[in-house]
Length: 288
Image 1 (tube, rainbow, N blue to C red):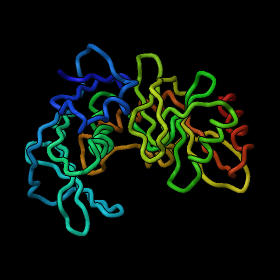
Image 2 (image 1 turned 90 degrees about the vertical axis):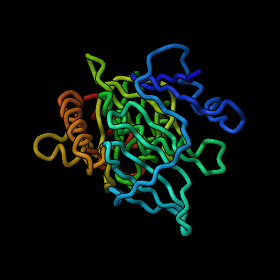
Image 3 (image 1 turned 90 degrees about the horizontal axis):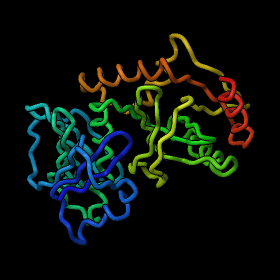
Image 4 (image 1 turned 135 degrees about the horizontal axis):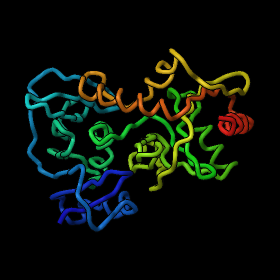
């Protein structure tokens, strides 16, 4: 029997996964998203049949002791895999169908009781979301006072520090500490927490109306100002999760982003690592 999970507006089905102690992740990582009935938008399937890509990777990334690669297969499917270094032995492999409706785990040789496989879905699930009108950013999703905002910045600029000041001093909720994911519900853009949150470990199964997207940078004083005009895309585009090597993904992302920016204001926050930065941003959002 498939296990169903509602993540934001999308229903995911985990199909054919072993029901034993080797795969305990569903009982803790996904438990708060579990539902009993529904028609799945995305099926995550367990079918250990590894595939040899047989082509040049579209993207490679070396991270600590592993290499991650992305390929496009002849039928339009996207293959993601992880190899250990320096031996270059296959550890994990997923294949996503051309329409984004199925992601298949085709290989898992990690001693992680399924946790490594589940966490590595982050490398494909946000691309699959694009096929279901869901837009995702590399950033923190914060809820405060019944409204949400996205906090984005390059690594090392201080977005995690700033987000946790909202949590600690304003009783805000961090709905996701690394992925800010949004959809339009017919009236407004909503943000929601997913179980894929990078190394932050922070996620909550809630959704909230989005009031603003905030691009953070370090500064010598705290100030926040609206971003408009030709520079708008320059501020926002680097933080959208989308593979630049795939035209279909890019077109879907740009269409969604255009609709998003028509309704969600953008603020640039230049700040220090001081609690006053939170008050400056809060005032700026209240004045939108």
